[in-house]
Length: 345
Ligand code: DOR
Ligand code: ZN
Image 1 (cartoon, rainbow, N blue to C red):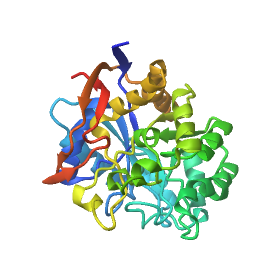
Image 2 (image 1 turned 135 degrees about the vertical axis):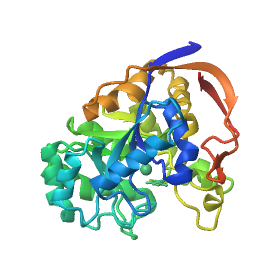
Image 3 (image 1 turned 90 degrees about the vertical axis):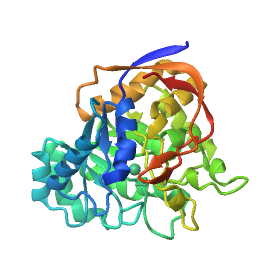
């Protein structure tokens, strides 16, 4: 197989940032993806339906000419999110979901939720209005080891939300552990998960063995190859419609990652579908790529599948060492390394 044509994929988890930074990267996603769920962790965050609509319009204005790309906006939940605001969101056509960041879990999450009980009345509305809850699934208790924070979150928080809101649609975002794979597999049809290219292609050795590599630092942090990375790969290529594409592409300035306290986030929008193709091809499951990339996410969100197509060719190319990013540089995942599939223009 030297060429594959796929229904245009969607990215169910994307950070676009704002202003000039957004203008540097949005065209890359628009080239590859039909739609994307846009993360609301700007500074300040997108906490109202009106802000989500404005951010949506700024994204549309930043798109390169003649590109068709639909940003699906997300409300950032805080302890103060009101039932009225959620009702407003349910009536705002640009808004498709709401995001739970446990306060302090990751980049720009300080306004997140301090205790899940504080948003129970809002979750009630989301369940009723069928607004999906997107979850950064990590506890923030400093006494919990960073490598265990996802598994503890599933056990202590997610299981209770699922018990108390059995009809709520939930996407456990960017899963990183076998615990998460097993949980999602064993849950009913309302629960799904996104998987990033970096958690499929890398593990903590890539970040920490033979030197510390800040461009592999993201949250949730990369885990062990066995059993975690292996379980993620098995889930992605399995053909289960509970697992779908979400890059979590999160651009940061090169100098802010290469620092004494480097920030979390891996940029992959430049080569997202090629990175996923690398995984599926390595495991001889290219025929499973389209479901994961282009069907299962749309089906879960209850949206029509895209009708446009993209074509990938088996053609080795080297990922650039960096891209211009708002007057500075961003270093992509796989920078300077070879990929074996290339998206045709
Ligand atoms: O690595 C990450 N970067 N994880 C997140 O949850 C947020 C993201 C960002 O916004 O940079
Ligand atoms: Zn993210």
